[in-house]
Image 1: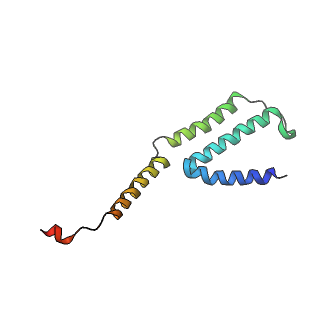
Image 2 (image 1 turned 60 degrees about the vertical axis):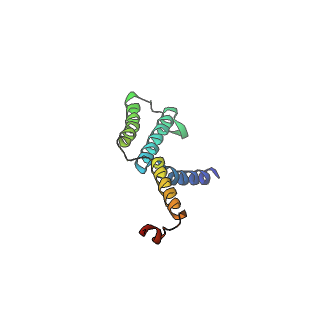
Image 3 (image 1 turned 30 degrees about the horizontal axis):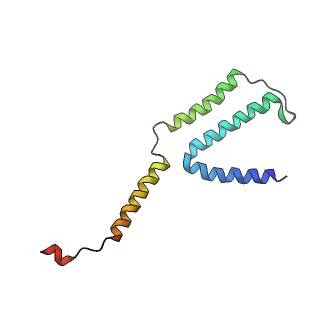
Length: 111
């Protein structure tokens, strides 16, 4: 009974967390691919009283194309979050260093 609520909370929080890190396109491509894999397994075993459907080569190729599309959406994309975070951290460190320095002495600079 509680599994539905826990699963919903996990799904929602992972959507927010992972889509920011992976990118929305990649996240939803992976989510769709995982759903397709789960559906293939359910069809193969006739889960939940469903009709058994064989896992054919065509169905496996369809799932592989979904994951292949994920790879293609990543090709040539902008820097990752880690790279952006590193450059933001460097900029923050530089601004903190400048803030810690005393202001220049106007008299000393005119001599």
